[in-house]
Image (tube, rainbow, N blue to C red; front, side, top):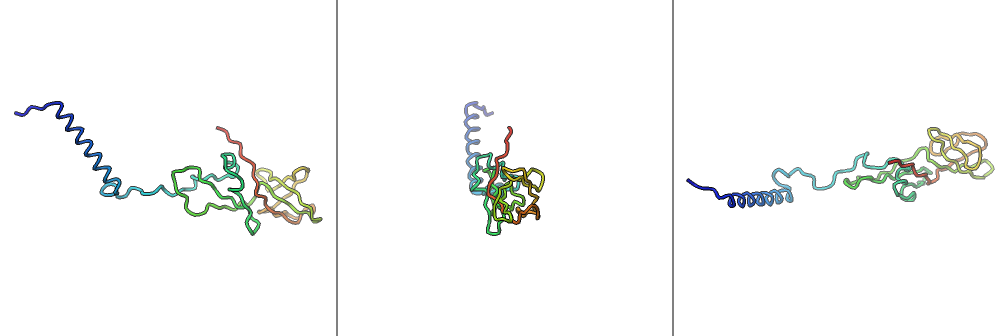
Length: 163
């Protein structure tokens, strides 16, 4: 009849545990056996991993110059930044903003005015005046009151962040 010594049982248990951890660590680091299908790179970013609103991005510390640009076709482009660091963005996240927050409108006499989009409308209120301009996508004014042309401005106000 064999007698068990408690100290040898504990030492044997610890040795087995350490050996098992080393074996599992080697299998995981080489991606073999049960770890063959584990991801080797961070996952690809999904739409919820990006900041979709320029105002939110600016309020979170991003600069307008890094987010907004007017391309050669006169369209305002918003480059969505990643809001989480646990993923890899694939491809450019450039989106056309159809109704920019600020537009420059040209009058028939050649003068220019700046307008700010009235929320939930397609109207722009002229800054410093009581005039409103009704516009189509991309700041194109609907013919009225002498406005003949419009162009987006790469400018945006930060959103109000409430915690």
